[in-house]
Image 1 (cartoon, rainbow, N blue to C red):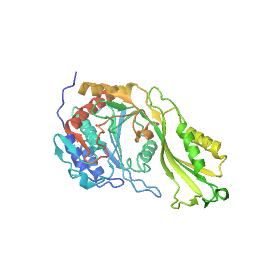
Image 2: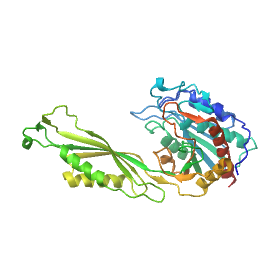
Image 3: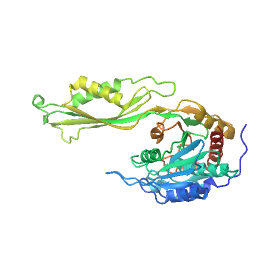
Image 4: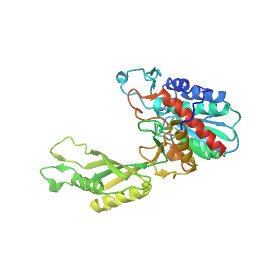
Length: 390
């Protein structure tokens, strides 16, 4: 049975529009955190602004807010930064005007994920209107999720740990639903590692190949071996891992010159049968089998996240129960898609992701249904009540 709607104490759509009106394209905040902080302080939250810096990366402003000092502690994690709008002329509305048309709120960040942030704040307002909390609620909001993710969630978590701030569970408001609200909760994510392989040889004239050392055939053989590698067939909660070649580069404009170097880039999205380190070791073994020991080739690996899983249990079950109560639909548990800042949070506490429909995220005319923002508010309120009552 679908739960009856509760009147809103704080309008989530109005707050979402105020957030969207701030063009907070990474790494700029553009006042988005100010809007959010004012709304939270009006509800009694203590707020801390946490700017972080690192050499070679943009300065990032972040926000941590907490209501309550004891009891069970539920954290909501999200980001106010958004991706660039792209071709502005292709938009049918101003990307930052927060226009409502046909029951849908348009604007960069409507889906990913200012709409969900607004829904959670409104849900807190709804829950606290009935009296003091029996526990604590916090928000960890970064401005660096869509960027390099160096000066954001990771450093806020370090700051929290130094203060003894450790949530019992964390809800991340990413747009997890493919087509309709209530379809999917993310209970884990695949890991991701980017590789760049370079094979070296000796430049020469194509008419005298015996006087040169062409690196291209060796690179091609390595790539063929990588392409033939079946990493796994999946697990109970994860799809099969995949290796995708994204670039092959020689940088040779001449047709009569054998190049001295050839390189390739490839990405591995992997499940919890692997680690980034184990994958790098396997790639190195394959390259060694073709080219011999390091010397004629080099491999660089950049890890953007390890695979993680919060097995089905009390917390993600609570979210599913809330969806079913509000929508009459029970979402599936999934680990599909890319990655999120949940990859940093899972080592601190159980984490699950649930937000709006992601069909238009990062696209021209990004939008969210007004009815979905309102329903998500009710779902979040059910989650908060259920979690703090446990």
